[in-house]
Image (cartoon, rainbow, N blue to C red; front, side, top):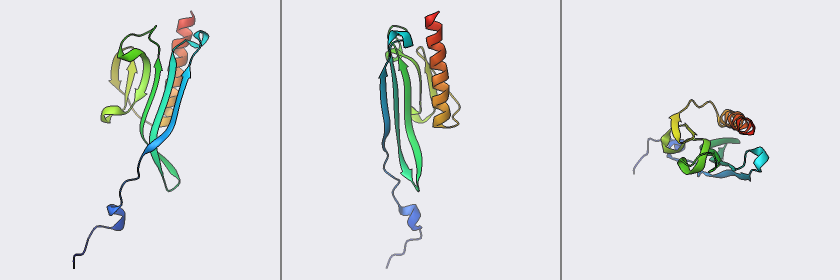
Length: 117
């Protein structure tokens, strides 16, 4: 008879991640034009939502031709949290997905205000 020393919890498979949110907003010229995209992946465990992957982007080819038109974006692809801005990529601190969305929205609003000047 073989006895396992691992706890049942350690033997459980990690929850399967799924697409939690996917939004796409085409913007009118007065809002800066372009496209806002939000995509969030994760799972729910014990009533709590765990976000495993995210990508937030403002895409406008009229403003930026680099990085597939991504003017501004945040994501955690490639194993680290990072910020895209006008063709550059830099790592960034991560507090929470909600805080990242708020930061993104503030920066996007600033970009739109500069475009209106």
